[in-house]
Length: 104
Image (cartoon, rainbow, N blue to C red; front, side, top):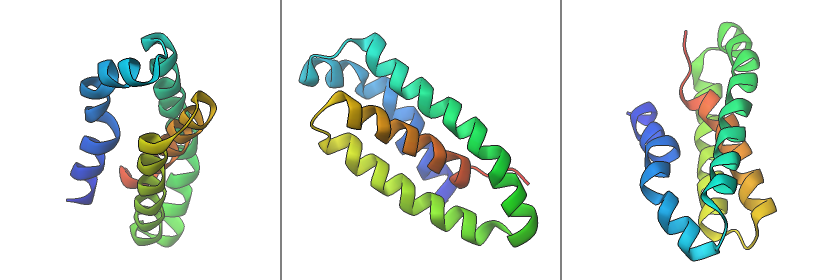
């Protein structure tokens, strides 16, 4: 259940919210998508380390950490006052996604 909800919140909502984010902030869709894309790249890199932790400790620690980090990232995305923090929030969301979508 956690995995399904985290996919919906972190990834699928982005395409629906993109036009509104651009309207509300004045940032270009390209810049917003670049932040989202960097989050995806971060998730890929962090996934390598996540896999190692999964093998050694199991999924509980990884998914719990990812859920907390994902919550922090979503709150940051909702309340960020500038693009730099928005970008950082997507990087954090990418790292969180590597933990909440583990592949064993």
